[in-house]
Image (tube, rainbow, N blue to C red; front, side, top):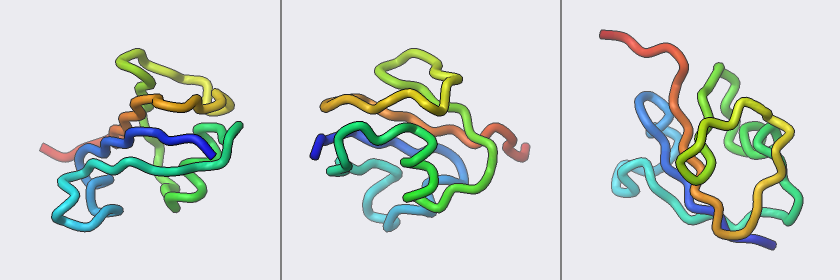
Length: 78
């Protein structure tokens, strides 16, 4: 198991309890990919992913212990 820091923006924040303010520390399987994480979180919409402050377009990226994972909805209203 590894630990990642997750931050969700926009409508994605609704995945977590309101008191979490879109933030969580998750314990996940070692070798979990971004794609696997999205499936676990039941995110079916297109998202933009940032890992440790850098845009990560490759959904096959394997998460590492301590990664800061930020998910943005790719389309938001105005």
